[in-house]
Figure 1: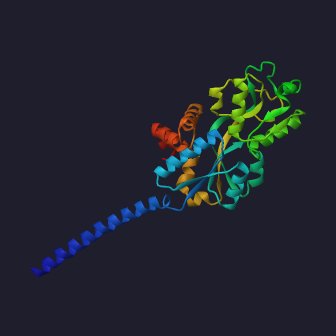
Figure 2 (figure 1 turned 120 degrees about the vertical axis):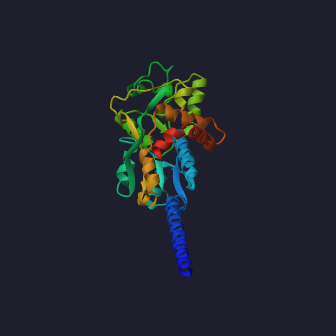
Figure 3 (figure 1 turned 90 degrees about the horizontal axis):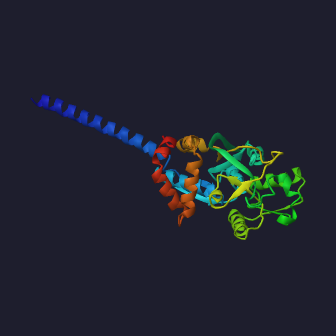
Length: 295
């Protein structure tokens, strides 16, 4: 009888052990799933452009909901590329190709990972004027109307790819204009002030951008195609990022947005008291789309 009790006790011990082992394996798998998210801070570069502020805050919301610790570093494009090269930054979410950021691709292609995947495929860049400036419809028209614009093109961040392309445009069209660097908010403010007074103004702008929903602006024709045609927006990461954050790397490659989606996101972020609040609202309303990215 005692021997049977010993056998039953042994079976019970083995069974409990098996159950605990199974639970341990499950917990271990769960721990492995969380390991990537519990790593040190993930740093994303943020450039002070409307669409960049929108998408960086959107990804901060998405990733933090997945357990990541995300920091947004507010820097310009040149500093962003250097930080990616040195490994001081993990990712930049906005690289315009094939034209606007071609110089950065050329300089950093061996030390920074430029994703072949694109998240927006219908971008446009060019000089814009208010639609009421009826006599100016092409970059060529700027020559004979130099006095109207006082020989100035109101620009934004120095070092931005589009600013460098605009400098090239001045050479290509032999335009005796000065490109004035400032910041995107300052440039938009100047556009708003000019439109309020119904004055002429010319500035380099891009689509997608919320400003087109606020003001009536038109792109000037660019016969020499200095700005290129349709631009696509990529992301870039430091070397080793895909090995350190394989899930996030895949999610960024899955990321796709259309005009309506990016337009609404920018609108939410711009109108919120804090950009993160606008991003949270958009993420909440578009969970089905986000699930396609982070599947």
